[in-house]
Amino acid sequence: MSKSENSRCWRGCGETGTLLHCWWECKLVQPLWKTVWRFLRKLTIELPYDPAIALLGIYPRDTEMLMHRSTWTPMFIAALSTIAKTWKEPKCPSTDEWIKKMWFIYTMEYYMAMRN
Picture 1 (cartoon, helix red, strand yellow):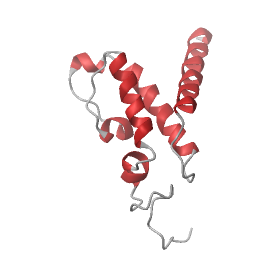
Picture 2 (cartoon, helix red, strand yellow; picture 1 turned 90 degrees about the vertical axis):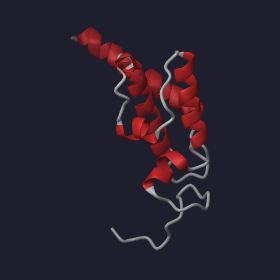
Picture 3 (cartoon, one colour; picture 1 turned 180 degrees about the vertical axis):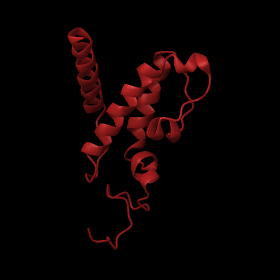
Picture 4 (cartoon, one colour; picture 1 turned 45 degrees about the vertical axis):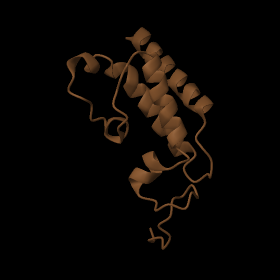
Protein backbone atom coordinates (compact mmCIF):
# COMPACT_ATOMS: atom_id res chain seq x y z
CA MET A 1 0.00 0.00 0.00
CA SER A 2 1.24 3.44 -0.79
CA LYS A 3 0.72 6.35 1.53
CA SER A 4 -1.71 8.92 0.16
CA GLU A 5 -0.58 12.53 0.16
CA ASN A 6 -4.16 13.71 0.58
CA SER A 7 -5.35 13.69 4.20
CA ARG A 8 -8.81 15.06 3.43
CA CYS A 9 -12.06 13.24 4.15
CA TRP A 10 -12.81 10.67 1.45
CA ARG A 11 -16.40 11.86 1.28
CA GLY A 12 -15.23 15.20 -0.05
CA CYS A 13 -16.45 17.43 2.78
CA GLY A 14 -13.06 19.18 2.90
CA GLU A 15 -12.21 18.35 6.53
CA THR A 16 -9.15 16.39 7.68
CA GLY A 17 -10.01 12.72 7.23
CA THR A 18 -9.16 11.16 10.58
CA LEU A 19 -10.85 7.87 11.40
CA LEU A 20 -13.02 9.60 13.99
CA HIS A 21 -14.03 12.18 11.43
CA CYS A 22 -14.83 9.65 8.68
CA TRP A 23 -16.88 7.36 10.95
CA TRP A 24 -18.52 9.92 13.26
CA GLU A 25 -17.84 13.65 12.83
CA CYS A 26 -18.27 14.13 9.07
CA LYS A 27 -21.28 16.27 8.23
CA LEU A 28 -22.28 13.59 5.71
CA VAL A 29 -22.50 10.78 8.30
CA GLN A 30 -23.93 12.81 11.19
CA PRO A 31 -27.53 12.65 9.83
CA LEU A 32 -27.42 8.85 10.02
CA TRP A 33 -26.08 8.84 13.59
CA LYS A 34 -28.72 11.37 14.64
CA THR A 35 -31.38 9.10 13.13
CA VAL A 36 -30.00 6.11 15.08
CA TRP A 37 -30.23 8.09 18.34
CA ARG A 38 -33.74 9.28 17.45
CA PHE A 39 -34.82 5.64 17.04
CA LEU A 40 -33.24 4.79 20.39
CA ARG A 41 -35.18 7.61 22.08
CA LYS A 42 -38.41 6.33 20.51
CA LEU A 43 -37.62 3.00 22.17
CA THR A 44 -37.12 4.93 25.44
CA ILE A 45 -33.42 4.12 25.44
CA GLU A 46 -31.49 7.21 26.56
CA LEU A 47 -27.84 6.76 25.62
CA PRO A 48 -25.30 9.58 25.65
CA TYR A 49 -24.55 10.77 22.10
CA ASP A 50 -20.99 9.47 22.19
CA PRO A 51 -18.83 7.91 19.46
CA ALA A 52 -17.21 5.56 22.01
CA ILE A 53 -20.56 3.80 22.36
CA ALA A 54 -21.34 3.42 18.66
CA LEU A 55 -17.83 2.89 17.29
CA LEU A 56 -16.03 1.02 20.07
CA GLY A 57 -18.85 -0.62 22.03
CA ILE A 58 -17.88 1.16 25.25
CA TYR A 59 -21.20 1.35 27.06
CA PRO A 60 -22.25 3.25 30.19
CA ARG A 61 -22.00 1.16 33.36
CA ASP A 62 -25.63 1.81 34.24
CA THR A 63 -27.01 -1.72 34.74
CA GLU A 64 -30.49 -0.68 33.64
CA MET A 65 -29.03 0.51 30.33
CA LEU A 66 -27.01 -2.65 29.77
CA MET A 67 -30.13 -4.77 29.53
CA HIS A 68 -30.89 -2.94 26.24
CA ARG A 69 -27.49 -3.71 24.73
CA SER A 70 -28.93 -6.47 22.53
CA THR A 71 -31.23 -3.85 21.02
CA TRP A 72 -28.76 -1.09 20.27
CA THR A 73 -25.71 -3.16 19.27
CA PRO A 74 -27.29 -4.44 16.01
CA MET A 75 -28.45 -0.88 15.31
CA PHE A 76 -24.87 0.36 15.58
CA ILE A 77 -23.50 -2.52 13.50
CA ALA A 78 -26.06 -1.77 10.79
CA ALA A 79 -25.12 1.93 10.83
CA LEU A 80 -21.40 1.14 10.59
CA SER A 81 -22.05 -1.25 7.72
CA THR A 82 -24.12 1.39 5.92
CA ILE A 83 -21.38 4.00 6.38
CA ALA A 84 -18.72 1.57 5.10
CA LYS A 85 -20.82 0.73 2.05
CA THR A 86 -20.80 4.38 0.95
CA TRP A 87 -17.23 5.04 2.14
CA LYS A 88 -15.84 7.05 -0.79
CA GLU A 89 -19.11 8.50 -2.02
CA PRO A 90 -19.86 12.19 -1.44
CA LYS A 91 -23.30 11.54 0.03
CA CYS A 92 -25.00 10.82 3.30
CA PRO A 93 -25.46 7.13 4.08
CA SER A 94 -29.12 6.29 3.52
CA THR A 95 -31.51 5.77 6.41
CA ASP A 96 -33.40 3.31 4.20
CA GLU A 97 -30.22 1.28 3.70
CA TRP A 98 -29.65 1.32 7.46
CA ILE A 99 -33.18 0.02 8.10
CA LYS A 100 -32.75 -2.70 5.45
CA LYS A 101 -29.48 -3.75 7.07
CA MET A 102 -31.17 -3.91 10.50
CA TRP A 103 -33.95 -6.09 9.08
CA PHE A 104 -31.33 -8.37 7.56
CA ILE A 105 -29.47 -8.67 10.88
CA TYR A 106 -32.64 -9.38 12.86
CA THR A 107 -33.85 -11.88 10.23
CA MET A 108 -30.54 -13.77 10.41
CA GLU A 109 -30.70 -13.75 14.22
CA TYR A 110 -34.24 -15.16 14.05
CA TYR A 111 -33.23 -17.97 11.69
CA MET A 112 -30.20 -18.81 13.81
CA ALA A 113 -32.41 -19.01 16.90
CA MET A 114 -34.89 -21.25 15.07
CA ARG A 115 -32.09 -23.50 13.86
CA ASN A 116 -30.70 -24.12 17.33
